[in-house]
Image (cartoon, rainbow, N blue to C red; front, side, top):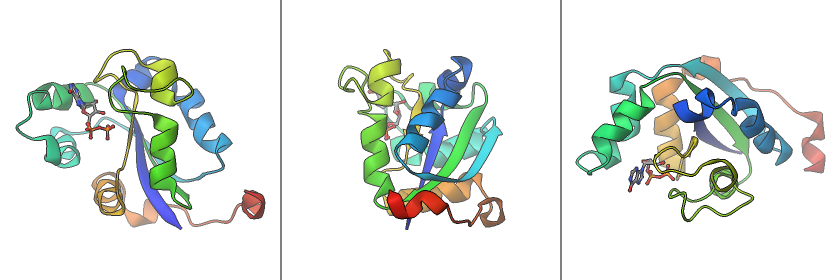
Length: 147
Ligand code: IDP
């Protein structure tokens, strides 16, 4: 079973979209195993976006992501990394298709509402940046045999 780190960014929180975004992930049949409403520290934000250091948008991105609370989550499911990024939609809002979270709700990059890990390695690193292992729940959903 694969895990991913999904984070509703400060714009998603401010716009009151937590519930609708979480619903889409639940509707898809994924399992929530951890959730935390926090304001990322600058150190956490820099670790999270280390791969973008030096890029033109980096400073703005760090300011944006630390500007208010985020809803950080860990979700589980088969191939969840690939599938959740399809549910989220493309990075640039001009490329995000209708039917995706970004395509339906966002109209300005970098205000694209939600982050999703792009590989197993990133997911492990990003989860550890926001969660201790004992904050993640191990449980069965009875419905899982039907999804
Ligand atoms: P992702 O969030 O779809 O994985 P990344 O390339 O990892 O995309 O970029 C991280 C975040 O940085 C994006 O979600 C977006 O908020 C911001 N970002 C990416 N590219 C640009 C850009 O060209 N201009 C401004 N912000 C950007």
